[in-house]
Length: 91
Image 1 (cartoon, rainbow, N blue to C red):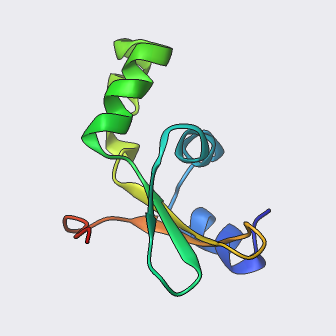
Image 2 (spheres, rainbow, N blue to C red):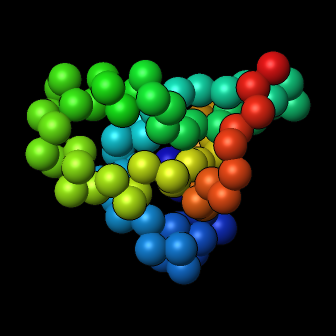
């Protein structure tokens, strides 16, 4: 389920629905401790996508592998979507 804000941000930031689906299926989860989860593509998740889908489709969509989304832990609603500009610091 997307919030209205998330739908607007995805359109403004040109994040296609396929990338959203891949984040759900293959994305790495990072809990922030405040009730939200960040989903993003890590090296491990990209390798998993290549095994499942093949190298060709993943290489064609390489520019979308810096996308991320924030979801609520309470109801699983997508809060926002965006592009990573730096490395994700994990604790």
